[in-house]
Length: 267
Image 1 (cartoon, rainbow, N blue to C red):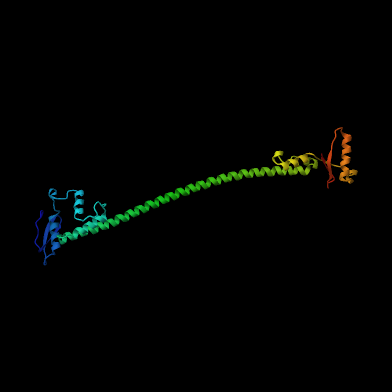
Image 2: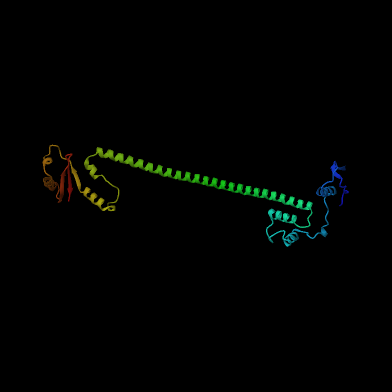
């Protein structure tokens, strides 16, 4: 070997502060230890690249595949595949014990590296998925909150509008009720009941037509007409209207009310 000289089997080589010293041993070192001692003493072996059959990764892959050390052909290169290849190399015939142990040691180290890489990849993927899920959940929550707030504002605005309309209707109804209580029944009959068109509902139109033909007559308390029957009242009113106007009028009915008034319906 190149480098420092090879020591005898009865000596061990040690290095301290850049100096090489030897210590004689009482027993012979094991062959493997002796070989590795020679390697350490000689340093790294310099290889002549021109004399090597394998000069790049492509040739190296073909070399391994031809000898069935890397199977199947064209399979993706992974740490696991390279680990298996190293174990296959260690089992080849002609390999001495130091080479076998060295190759197997590298294979086991690569296996540990692969486990670490896989664990790291799994951890990175899990973290990425968790972060993505967290972001999606945050965005969904924010969107849902905004949507709920918008819906709430819209419903609140509608409720406020309906409340204002209801308050206005109640106020108008209260005013109308007050006016009805303080006005004669004659005004109540002539007051418009509904603002809807008369032709919107036939029954409503008929009722409105009847109401327009009705009139309320208030009689004095001492009037003799209070004691007359309804049929007699019709004749009395026709006679009075004939004396008051030259126009011909027809009365359909005359109905005495409990408050003393008479409801007259014209024909």
